[in-house]
Each structure stands twice: as C-alpha cells, then as structure tokens.
Length: 218
Ligand code: HEC
Ligand code: HEC
Image 1 (spheres, rainbow, N blue to C red):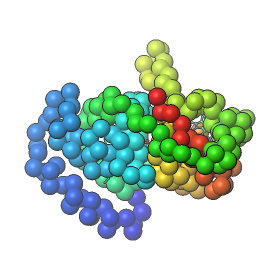
Image 2: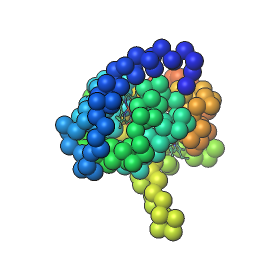
Image 3: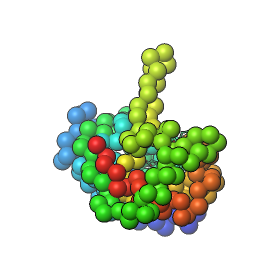
C-alpha cells in the first residue's frame, strides 16, 4: 500500500470498523443477504454482487476459486487496492472463503455496456482473439467467449480458475488492465497477465474493454 493511501485508509477504517467491532459473533456457513458479513461488502458490491458503478467489479457469478484467490492476494498485500487490502485484512481466511462461495452463487449480471461503439468493439475483438503476445492470445486463456474456465487437478486437489471477463464493468477493466501494463510490482500474482499486458497501449485497452464489457456474461 502506498504512503499517501493512509488517509483514505483511516476514513475507510472508520466506515468499516463500527459494525466489525460491534459483532464479535461468528456466522454460520450458509450466508444470507442480511448477514452482517454481506452487509460489510454491500456498499461496494451490493448484496447480490453486482457493481454499484462502473469503477467497481461485478463479483456475482464469478468462479469461486478465482474469488478466493483474489481475496487471499488482497489479504497478503500482493494485489494493490486500498479498500480491499484493508477489508480482507479484517477477515479470517475461512470467512473470505465463505464470502467467495456466497458471491459465486449469485446470478451473473448482464453486459455492463449495452450499446457498444461497433468500430471500437470490432478492433477489441481482433486484439482479443487474434493478436498474440509471447505466442498466446487473450482468447487462448480466457476462452473465445471470454467466460473463463475452472481447471482442477485430481492429483494436487488444487482448483484454479481463469476469471470470466465477459460483461465486466468497463472502468474497472481499464484500471486493472492499465495496472498490468505499468509493471506495477503490486501485481506479482498476475504474471500471465503482466506478459500479455506489456504490449498493450491505452487505445488497445479502450478497444478491448469496449468488446469485453459488452459481451454476454452467461
Ligand atoms: C469500500 C468499497 C469496498 C468494499 C466495502 C468491498 N470492496 Fe471488494 N472491491 C472494491 C474495489 C474498488 C475493488 C477493485 C480493486 C482493484 O482495483 O483491483 C474490489 C475488488 C474485489 C474483488 C476482486 C474482483 C475481481 O474481479 O478480481 C473481490 C473478490 C472483492 N472485492 C470482494 C469483496 C468482499 C467479499 C467484500 C466484503 C468483505 C468487499 N469486497 C468489500 C471495493 C470494495
Ligand atoms: C497466460 C494466460 C493469460 C493470458 C494470455 C491472458 N490472461 Fe488475463 N488473466 C489470466 C489469469 C490467470 C488471471 C487471474 C490472475 C490472478 O488470479 O492472479 C487473469 C486476469 C485477468 C483480468 C482481471 C479479471 C478481474 O476480474 O479482475 C483481466 C481484465 C484480464 N485477465 C484480461 C486479459 C486480456 C484483455 C488479455 C489479452 C491481452 C489477457 N487477459 C490475457 C490469464 C491470462
């Protein structure tokens, strides 16, 4: 976390600490929308995991193993976000797993961009499907329909997933993709992406986002 972020952190802490300190109770595994845990996330992800604005990610219907990994990275300060680093640090790993399970079960929202600029989206599709960086395209990993996938290994019993991108919020996508291209050391876990992102300029990112954000998520 950057030093100038401490002021933001302090106000966030005031916002979040009261309900946390007021509830020392532990909750049952099956969370409901009125659970205190969900209420803590709802300011920025709503109760159903849909983003309240284009700068926040939709987390509804995202793969559980991806959500768990993202939350773990925030908790371990391996993924930069003032809000999420603080929030994840206030929860036990087991609670984060339960939250990921809850949000993964919510229905994924429709495309965040309903009427895309067709020229821009067509350019985005071209980059997404056919431009290769280090011999591999976005579609090779995230799938031709940008819906991602889950892969499990029966030997190691580890499940990892490539996140679904289709229909995701545009400002969030731009922020994340710009972080990937900036060689920001706060994104070490996104290594496949770091390589993929390196050759993308801002115009490419705008085109990719127009394409991805207007695709059907289900
Ligand atoms: C104060 C606002 C805020 C609150 C409260 C909040 N989040 Fe977030 N969350 C964000 C923002 C902003 C991001 C995007 C971070 C980034 O730029 O990488 C995010 C990202 C995430 C991601 C990663 C999504 C992805 O596609 O990679 C997950 C998972 C997540 N939040 C879960 C939660 C959970 C669970 C809670 C409640 C315990 C919570 N958040 C509470 C603002 C918030
Ligand atoms: C080598 C495989 C690979 C390639 C190629 C790749 N990605 Fe990814 N991408 C991933 C993985 C794995 C993650 C999750 C990273 C993590 O969990 O640390 C990810 C994460 C993302 C995210 C963040 C999703 C979220 O919800 O926060 C975006 C956006 C993204 N990729 C877009 C792209 C685009 C656009 C391209 C093409 C320029 C691309 N990716 C190419 C594997 C890949």
